[in-house]
Image (tube, rainbow, N blue to C red; front, side, top):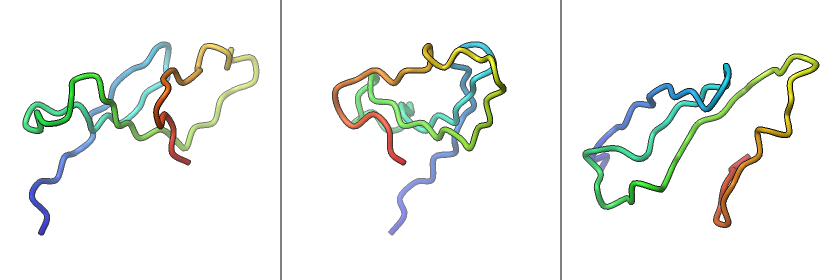
Length: 65
């Protein structure tokens, strides 16, 4: 049984890099405010864009491919 569908909200992470953010979500408070679940991509980066500033920080599961 599906209890709730959470639509992604567009969030800018710097420059023109946007993600679709699902968590945190106000009506799902059992998930902490510092847990992020983002949809990233597909994305084509133009030559010359500094990719070194796009590192994923965190020690847990940070990126699902």
